[in-house]
Image (tube, rainbow, N blue to C red; front, side, top):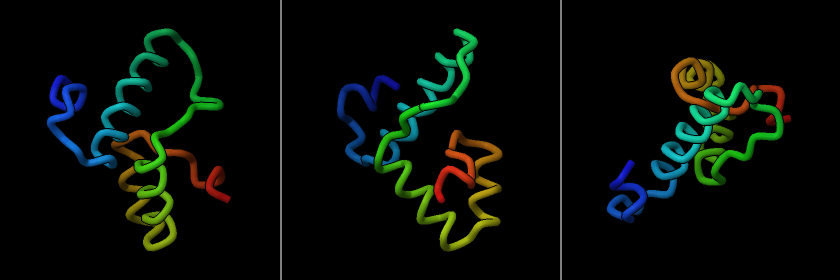
Length: 74
C-alpha cells in the first residue's frame, strides 16, 4: 500500500485495484453495502473489457477481487 501511495507503481490498473480493495475493506468494516460504489476508472475498464472478451474469466476474477456485478455493465 505504501508503494502505491508514494507513487512507486505508476500502473493505473494496479493502483485502481489496490484503491478498490482498500475501500471495500473500509466499507465492510463499517457495515456499508457496495451500492453506488465508485470503482477506479482504469480497473473498471479492465474488468469491462475482460467481461466482453471472456465472461468466464471475468467470473473467476470476480470471485477473488472486487468487481462490479455483470448486470451493472449493461
